[in-house]
Amino acid sequence: MNNKKIWLALLGILVSSMAIAGNTTANMTATSVLAPSCTITAFSVNFGAFMLPLSAQSSSGSIDLLCTRDTPYTIEMAYGGVYGQGQTSDGSYWTLAKRDNGTLYYLYSEGGAFIKSSPWFGVRATQAEIASSLGCMFDGNNRCQTARPSYDYGMMSGAAKGDAVAYSIYIPGDNSKVWNAGKNSYSGRGTGEQEHLSFQLKIVPSQTSNKFPAPDFYKDAVTVNIRY
Image 1 (cartoon, rainbow, N blue to C red):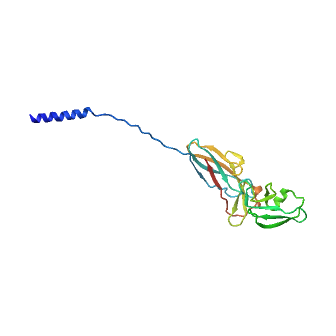
Image 2 (cartoon, rainbow, N blue to C red; image 1 turned 60 degrees about the vertical axis):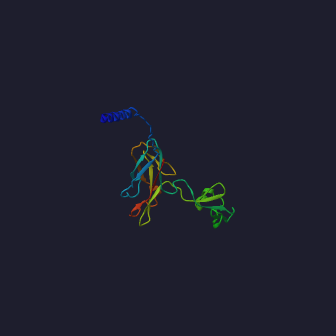
C-alpha cells in the first residue's frame, strides 16, 4: 500500500513538472565589413637583343591585378626624370644680380645662403635661354629654381660600359599615350576577380645618345603604384 502511494506521488510530481515546461526564443545578428582592397603583381620585361642601329623596338609587359568588386583604382608607372612634372630639386635657386655687361647670377640655397655666382654675358637673352644655360626654371618671382631634367622616358643603363638606352611604356590598349606618373595613368574598377593587364614598351632612339650602344647588360627600375 505504501509503495503504491509513493509511486503515485512521484508520478504526480513528474506530470506537474512536464506541465510547466516552456519555450523561449532569442535573436542574433551576423555582421561583417569588407574594406576596399587591391593587390598587384608586376612582371619583369625583357627586350631581348637590341637591333642596331637602335629603332623603335617593342616588347610587351603585363600586370596581374585583383581588386574588390566596384573598387575604383588608378595605376601609375614611375620612371625617368621626375616623371614629367618638372619638380625642383633641393630648393636652391638662381637670381639676377644686374643686367649689363658682366651680368651675374647668384645661386642661393633654399634658406637664402649664398652658394656661388655665374657670369652671364648674354644681356639680351630670353628667360628660356638663361634657364637652359643655368639648368633652372623661372618661377615668376625673379628666381630661377634649380630643377632636375623633366622627361617622360626611362633610361636602361649598361652595367659595365656606361651607355644608356631610352624606352617608354604605354597605356594598356593605347600606344599613343605614355604610361608615366607625370603624364598619364590607367584607371579602372575592380571586378572581384583577377585581371591581367597587358601593355607595350618601346625603345626611344631619338632620346638615346648612341644609336650603336656597346654590348652590355642594360636595365632600369620601374615603380608600379596602385591607388584605390
